[in-house]
Image 1 (cartoon, rainbow, N blue to C red):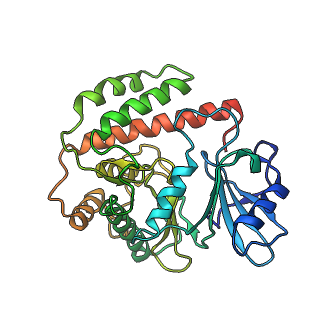
Image 2 (cartoon, one colour):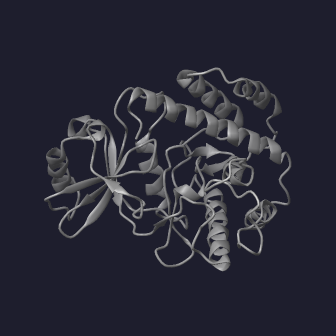
Length: 323
């Protein structure tokens, strides 16, 4: 989906019957006409994504990975549903064309969506941009997050997309189980977090649509302008607490590892990147919040969840079926 990422040939692990796919799309996708050329986006560690090219059109296909999957993981059908619903809102998403849940076509569930030309922003320090451009990108990123959290999910028919309330207790339980299912080593700090988090959940029961993986790497920037063209990778989306997304998007301010995932020492007028305080203030302004009590809980929860996700990626890599 992110068209400045490297495109690679489809490896044996992710290969499927391209002729069968072309036949299916000819019948079910209006305007599709082969022959079909297929390449895989190199990035992404969860649901493999492919560029489909015909003589005059391009599409993106996203599918479940091969192999035995963890419960409730890799739900591409949920990604399709949420983006299809959000097409009618101010949240920028690709247009959804079709969802196929018939394993007889390519072996797993997949969907086909609009291919948007833009810029992938994997390096959150935004090298090569001016300070004004960096600030504009970050401010638009906050705007999109606030817009998502302000969507009337009931009006979109998404009232059963998750369970309103009790979000953090459910998430802590889920990711604790996922972590245990993919654990390869004993990590004491993870054990301590799984003990600490359930006892320190804030009492605020606000519910909204949450992206679940809201970060620069899942944003496609406009090809020429400093703004968000599309928000991608909705696998972890659900009904939840908005500050879970906010904490996750601010982890880069606290990463100790220097590099493309850390904003440590890189904020302010010289770079144009907002400080964490500015990030939070802008979000509060756009959503009508006065303040964010218990901020450290949301950060701790976010780092715990990320660690659980990465443990799953590591385990799938050992098993040979990571994207």
